[in-house]
Length: 463
Ligand code: TYD
Ligand code: MG
Image 1 (cartoon, rainbow, N blue to C red):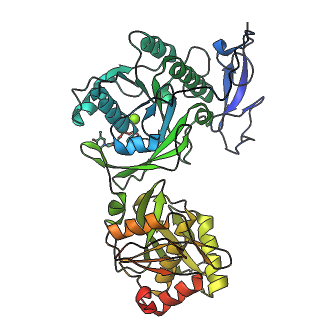
Image 2: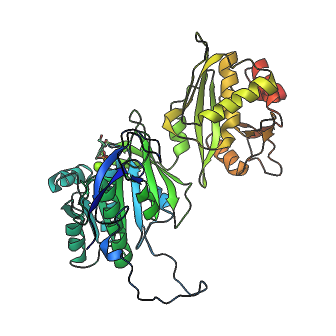
């Protein structure tokens, strides 16, 4: 029999230690360590996984195989992020802040799949069956043949799923509410969540069903409790958004069966989540065209070009150490752009308070946004608004040069489609500009700065 002992497990990162500490040595989180009872060694793996000594057959890498079978929900924005539908036999984790719309999205996906004749089981550990039914009715999906359960015990859930025909899709909402008899820790602890997720992952592999786990994220954006769950599942999607906006972004962060840089855009309405087929139009919807400090960035999200507005406010600072606040972009990247503006372009900007915001709550990771950020900063500093019909993209080097970026053609076409008539960017080489869009190429950031500072309409000044 396995010896029962306790271990002190960090609820943020899952690291185990032999004694209690105020701060986790592994991830540095304070007050996150909880005593958990374990059956055997660290992490207490499932009993059935104890190695048996029966050998297995090794197979050559070059064998015949079918490509992963997928079930397509028909919700295009969701299917894009999963890489073309849920993969049979795989586990997918959908993370997001409480109240962002995870349950709504998955209920809509469940209903869409049930409509296509799939057997879909929705297990809610948070809501009673009546609450899920009410939500479905509000969404106009009350008549769909989704099978419901309100249950939190993993063994009960698995026994239920194994009874009757195998399901195509199982949704578990949420992983933090599950508990298993196998371990004695309290529900919601790392060990419980990890063991439950393991059991469900094994169920997915053995039954061929696609399993979707819903996970809440903590304030700092990690899936609460175990980051280890992220390693166990085949794909991780984050559902993001900002409480003050109606739109939501589904973003792939890990995907064993597809690309991870895709996003799906939805809008939360009274009747649930609506797909947004043209996100650029949505992100630019409320743009104040004449305001100084606003620049339109032609970005890429996965395979799709997305235009968004970058807003900068440069204000004299009353403080010795000026303030920097960045929403939707990387703060250290902003520092770099500021340093290049100061050092290479002779712009005195560093002593000001600087606020940078990607409008609409979008998060940008691309260095290609450098040029749009620099343009917005200079525009705010000089009070000269940028031309309303111009888009910006280009990466800035530490030497003050503007580097070309990938997918220039796609960005230019998207800009033209949305009615923009000029693009300010690095050298685009042999890329053809679409008709009706004039392209101004820069190799030095200082050239762009000079034009904005000199003239409120930089592209015209060049002509
Ligand atoms: P929910 O899916 O319960 O979020 P999560 O599962 O991520 O915690 O979404 C709850 C929010 O969505 C709630 O604040 C109300 C809003 N909502 C709508 O605006 N319209 C709708 O049709 C529905 C069902 C929810
Ligand atoms: Mg929910």
